[in-house]
Length: 146
Length: 405
Image 1 (tube, each protein chain N blue to C red):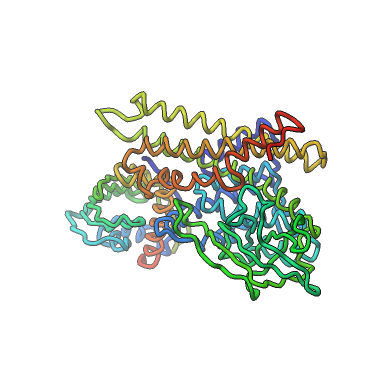
Image 2 (cartoon, rainbow over the protein chains, first blue to last red):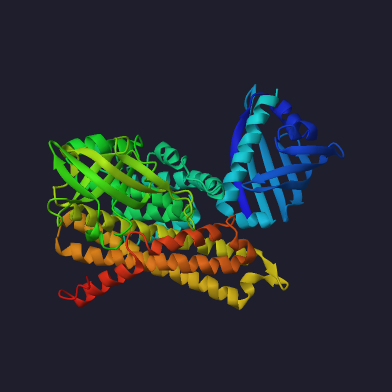
């Protein structure tokens, strides 16, 4: 099952700081509430265990995240994960632009492919749950970025 | 906008001209449905009534979808109403049932039969989402035959006193006001409808029915009335004219069920197609196996069978609203029965086939098709059983003198 989501949000800092924050695995991972643990392999890659709760489905998802920066304003993030009899591949593209001296606009596009048990929940549910998870991460991100 | 919903709107453009305002209403319906989907899913799995659903509907301003703008509604016509029903049906029949009982049965009855005072006291508040309404017709011994009601009323001073019970009432335990149908104790051939406030002495919720096959997010209750006093200004329609109120509401209700069932079939098709494209067995997508293709083809046919009688009935209802041509009433009665019979059967069969395409996961309530399977069975019973629908259809086709009951 493929799900595409996109949107935009603002970060209250300049483009350079925003870019540095979004390409730092430690800072980026700190914005994900359901992240159980993270093992930082190098400056762009980390492995993590995500706890997943959808209705009664409550399991762990092993995921590998790779950040590919394209300075000064583009970032690509790939997440490959599996668990709870399911697999997931997420390609997140971020495009940053200067809004003002102290505000950076971030436009994002997420292409997700989900297979296995979780995909059986249906696109409507998964799209809405994914969207609410992304909004949750963005709201944490806004409080952490300076 | 959900693709299958926008596809339906595009198709209907070939037979109906939408105004800009109507398209905006449908966008509201779609946005509400998106938000309702997760909420319904959460509550369904907990087997609990979704008390967030009325709040979400209120937030999106859709509770008075077909109610006159004069009372705060959106003033939508039957075509917009059936499209909304179709979209809600995709989300699940739990919300459709809440919405149908609150609006299609109860609010619409007040709009059609209520006095100006009743419209101010009940219709305006229900439309704003400040109260929830229910429709109390069915009794333990009066299902398909409403003339066998046992609930009675008698006049005492300026009030009527009601005694009796009601069964399988959607929204019954969460409603602030229920339209209660009862027979006159003095003249048993007369049936009347009363607007009853549920906070009055003598109104009791005897049971919240949780032991259902499905529809967990929708409230179903058994009610009883013990010397319940109702002021005479709360008679809905004329005293003794309750049967007219009941039948006109049921006509709305049947078209509402047909549209919701059309949405169920649409969602079963969407889900089954996605599953058939993705799931690999014997080295290829199961959609490439011919027996799975048969299920997909049958559900696709069911969708066409379900939606066209519903759309055509909506168009005829628009015509009736414009002309008030009494000849159309009989036709609408037959068309609503036909649309409801075909669509509810199509929903149940499609859910069964979609479960088969899903395999073991389809038997789980985690899957949308599993939930549709459990929910859709009741649509062949409520608002008129399959059998009553067939009698209605046959009677219309055979003509006068062939009434079976």
